[in-house]
Image (cartoon, rainbow, N blue to C red; front, side, top):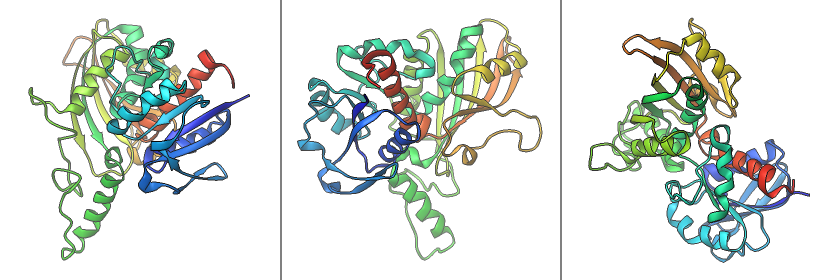
Length: 340
């Protein structure tokens, strides 16, 4: 016996990826339905070999459905997630709306699976920010061994993290570089993204950090350990899919780079590709479509007593969003609902 599953926001990048991953991982689905806003009503999307037509999120009755994967943004989530939860359907939400709610578990299954038990308080589970998700997969096994004191991270985030508009803007501006008559000014981003990098993701906060940077700090503390100090600089780069991160870690105890490499090789969800030669590392274009978080460039940091550096790359539409949501659904099924 399987589950009755809803995918809300099925016409967006993340919603479509959720459907792909549910099919690829053979999630035990008895029945599936896809929802979208009224303007996208009737749009066809694929689920394996099946074509589905979207229904209206505004009028949908969630009664009798087991799990709803939400990829509709915070405003719509604020309206529809409580309705689904009240109807007895467990919501797994990809927006930022519930991530910092103490009554809603924020889960990366490889890191804090036990937190799933807290879902019943609101019948809602939060999916973390894309840049946080891949980083904490790498941090957790190292933290278990040597206790992390501080993390300094610089991100190189692809335009798909800003949705279809971000992808379109990079594509249009790149073409316009070679056709100056067809100028494409910045709309989605604050500056030209083609052949450029922008040290600004989300809104600025009073202390000068951006909300994206604040998210990485707050979410790492909630998911891994509130004692870990985190400072982040988040940068948008002209890459279509795949987030990269340069991570500097300071530990309580000494951790040799070779031991760290072996720990990461054995850790769930991680693939270590770390050869000290040309091409002996993973770049974002190589991680697209993969489930793994890739770790490269593991090396000692000689400027502090117990430090390591590493390079972390992942498909942000997968581990940073859709894959993690489906993994949460799998965890929920295996540990709580137990129907599959």
